[in-house]
Length: 588
Image 1: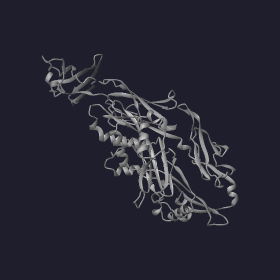
Image 2: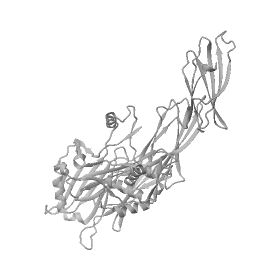
Image 3: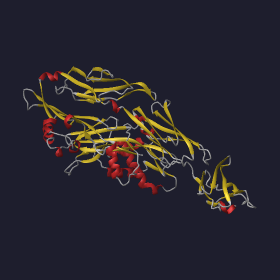
């Protein structure tokens, strides 16, 4: 099973293949050369499809031809818009749908910056507008040879001191920082053996992934003495209070699920590639009358054109100075709403104050894991339009439960899989769903809406029921999981004995063998085999071996002879063997 997403972002297109990009320049009605401000807005996406993913998989020599492809399920996703030397990076959450839609906007106040950007946008190849996505997802790791231990608050303080928030850093710089953190014992490497130095390279590589995913934001920015912008990272402002609750590194003794990230990025030319981009349509000049500044107006819209069936209500609260107002959106009334208040002036400059604070909350018809509503947190805008991305507050998690292609259903007649998930802030409230898998139904899918999916912990319970005439233990396994749950039919080390019957079938009609193996002092596993002339292929006795020192297999063998051929030959032979192969003909 493999997961795919777009390699680079693009802009959404409207009718006529028109890209959703607009630079609005607001100027004085009576003096057109008097520019007030400009707003740049664009709607981006990570457009991927099963067909495109399949073509990419077919072109890759490393991909199995029968690979199952599913969209990468993001637990969190953000997009950063930046224009090097004109505006700093501005990060917004994206929707957690398959396409990761995002509405990005920025305001420019300086006349020279406005004119420069308008000029550059006439030639996409020279336009430094850049969009960088950061997609967080879950990855399941098997028991590791080492694990990393750290006080992540201390690690974050180290990053603030050594890097700071305004330094563009590249992957090689994060790799060097990882090595320093380990060498200075701020992050320690815990290993099975006594030589952690043998794991340094792997440990530094894993720490680089952790640091990049947890503490950095991808950007495309200018670097001194460089002729074109380069892709890099900035240290981001984060809250570390919940980081210590998360599994960041693989563990020595247990399966773990860790957060990892991808960073699709694109410059403006790539964003609009394949669209009918025309600068004269994208750059719009709007004339304002003086009374425009008498009021601070914001139009509030939902980014999506419909609400999920489980959403009861969306409320948005806007605050401008001491004035506040709440707006409501429902499935029957989800059109744009207007916020309008008398403008406030800066007492020092006498100019209009633009910032409007807002937040929005989504209420659910049915609670999800004890969660009845989810909020965006405090946001701020200087724009005239606000788009509420409701889908950025919840994800549609699609659990894929699959028996491995080589799963041996002769060992287990069925597996009961129970998925459980709980919100970190609601540890006593969990949701579970069970699925019965067997040879006729070896896979299942479970789509579910999850508010704040990056705040959930997932685990899976697998109950294996041994098949009849199978030398295997009915078992129950519990482990953390991501969106994919694999089932394997080999749960323990195996005691393997190959039985063959190179008999003289003119004399022997049938051989029945009962093989028994004491996997524990209290439990014996047994399997019966039958050999005939028409079915004489070697058989494999493969039993769960909990004790690697326990090798003895007890055999109870019954020979049935052709009429008149028995003579003094034995009908029953009982023996034990430590061998890996045995020809039953030697015992007749």
